[in-house]
Length: 316
View 1 (cartoon, rainbow, N blue to C red):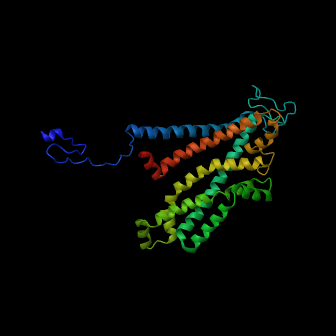
View 2 (cartoon, one colour):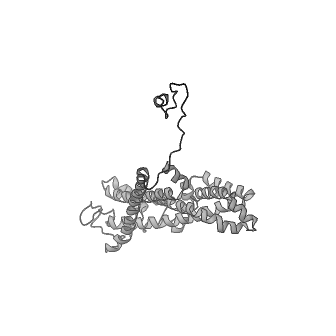
View 3 (tube, rainbow, N blue to C red):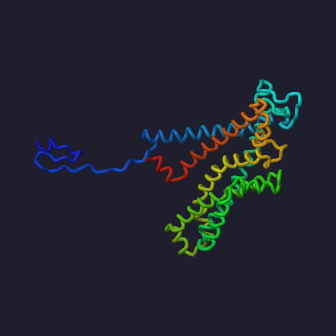
């Protein structure tokens, strides 16, 4: 009867004076695909991918097709249609030179995305090379490369970019160099930390004991492990490069004025806003924000899928 009165799950003392064992603690199980929690986590990731990827694909397709299907040159000037508000003939209105803002905005988005993609790839390759060399070599080369990284980080990126662009004003290569040479340090640190975490693994020790050189260990074992990190860094750098190019062009130090870009359009429209022509800035700014949010959504999904620590956090 005493056993029936005792609560076996609460660890209380029954009538006869004995204590029932307390329940053992069990860690929370990870969310699996078939459980409600796993379906919710996977549903959020798929929704993020579909929203970001669909919006990015639509913007990229529109940036390619709209200027081509419009049948007009985005640089064509019409002084009889200066600063016209949005209308069926000009859905985005016209700018201070009478140019159709719809065609010019999507042409500028295409240029900004292309420049940002090139900058992100160059910056990632440079940062991955420096980080891998620093982690593999160690010793004084590691300390020297990290001091270079600290030196570049100590200077504001926008200020350093302005100095580089001012030396070769109006050059597309100067804009690419100003962005790529100021944004590789974060990638270098991430890749270096990944290499240092892999360098002491047993399979690396086994490869070195078998006579593999540092170059072979880097090519066969370390590079395949850091490629996902480098690819994720490229995607994460893309929206930042778009904003950086826009800021330089807005200040008049970026791409040439005749080349349509979001930064050039915003820089030309800042004076027109004071005259009531709000559409010259509003529509290109919306496209810029939409492109940045789309890339950020795809990058967040990729981060959740590729980083083991992030996957474990989502599973708890």
